[in-house]
Image (cartoon, rainbow, N blue to C red; front, side):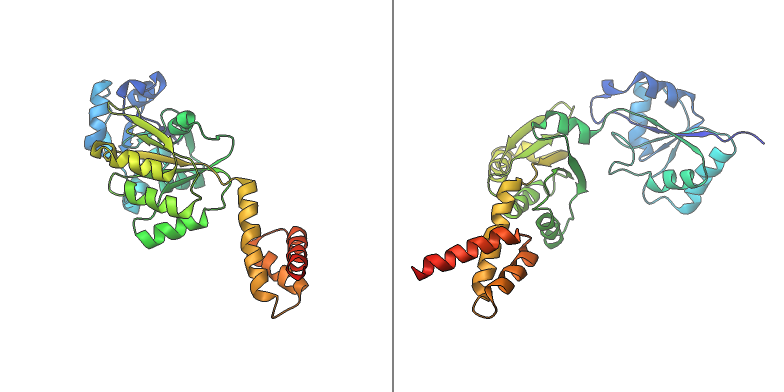
Length: 285
């Protein structure tokens, strides 16, 4: 029985075709088959780098039978390269089910690293990169999008989002409502492409920048939001807790009011109790 083939996860340029690596070209030339998100789109790249390897379609809506055909080819000894329309496959691009099933079958899966809009934008954003979370695309419906952003208001890591031309303004306005006014946001638009542009500022400033030139609202966007400031967040939780204490203190003991307020808001109970006692004492003087 022949040895199993290898599934290569190959990163391709996010815009500038010169960003393709020599190793990626070698792999794309040497494999038996290329599985591409959009075969027509990928043929432009493959023709530019003179790769004539056969190409089949593979995307998030591929039937199980199509995935199994690729897996069967790997099992029989064929080597296959998976590419997306741009950047690194599986990063908000197709491929998860294929790679997951390949791993379950103990097949060899090898990354061929290269361009990624996520990493490219982070590297030039000027925001903290030591800890970050990738949130991908926000929900398209306003209510769901606002709920997601509200749930991220306390996130202290830098947050990275992808956004489309159709929703960029709405998403930025929702970010302005969900996060504190001074929170910094970086916009990376059309990265590595001819009309690439960047902007760093508050949500309000970002909306003003985009609104000042309709061309800036067109294209593909990476939006990076600074994480919540721990001290500011603690102050916000404390203020919220004090409001709760004021509402409860006429119904329950001060100790109970502080305990409940701390549990609801996440504020530190000892500091909250001290502040509540001081406010009571000041009111009695």
